[in-house]
Image (cartoon, rainbow, N blue to C red):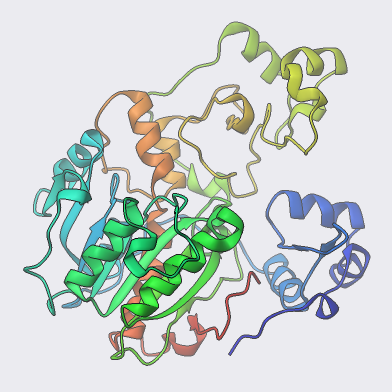
Length: 418
């Protein structure tokens, strides 16, 4: 079982550098790039756990893995997904052997994408506010969804469902209460941890517990779970009394680089830079960003952002071939979150986006180019969904491989970030 890690159990930048046999500057750079995780201490310093240092050492000595869309044998497990988008999580769960009984989202293009690629799935366009799942009690093993983290006007006043009434989490919890699945899977951005000073997440957990579920949550790093992308997601598992323990995927000792992910990627449409911006991005080296520009050009390009605090590492950012991608957003050419191809001066294309999110090449996206970027950028990476599906299988006694537990999964008494 994992334990809470306190500051006195952690080491600073210099100590981490000594153990990794690299310079302190390299430790800082790896932290900024998401290659090593740090907790920020009470004085603003970077603090590293020894287990994290051991993981990084293992990865440094491991060979790079090839890109692939992962699959496991089918099961008789059944799932329903709310807020399904273009199907990243649904496809990952399907690839893990969990059959989708119902998928719902209010994005018309995303539902067209699902219906075209998986016509046998029951994918409907609509609002969860109008959904009634009263026909499913006792029939569904997993209810999943990436609900938005709205602030709750009554957070902390302990009014049960009244605390979240009028929010999409209320609808998520209402429908979960109707279905009574064995496992509930919620996914969200890491920022939910601190949203409304932590009260939002605390209220969600309390409501799920009042429904009779045991709740655990953990931040998972997709770049260590067969996804060629530095993407952190907060995963919430809630299980009923039939499930003996909550399990989370264990990070792998390898990464998948952009080079592997984009090998032989099909050609596809994509947004383009204007002439002025292309001339600026031409000056940025592979893996570089705004600090690599001449100062006069840097000041002009960044405008008021030049004088603001923070690293602003997404501005004028060109990706690096031998690293995972930065987190994909809904547009690869946004000024604050640039996603420029490693060697060609252009934003990533739609199919390159899809590869990095682990969609198969035959998964077609519908709608305008901007809509396709949005659908892909908002999706849960397919391979992350796959690993979550394997964890659900293990919790329900349907492991895909006999050796999966404990090597593939771990349970945690307390949520930690390491």
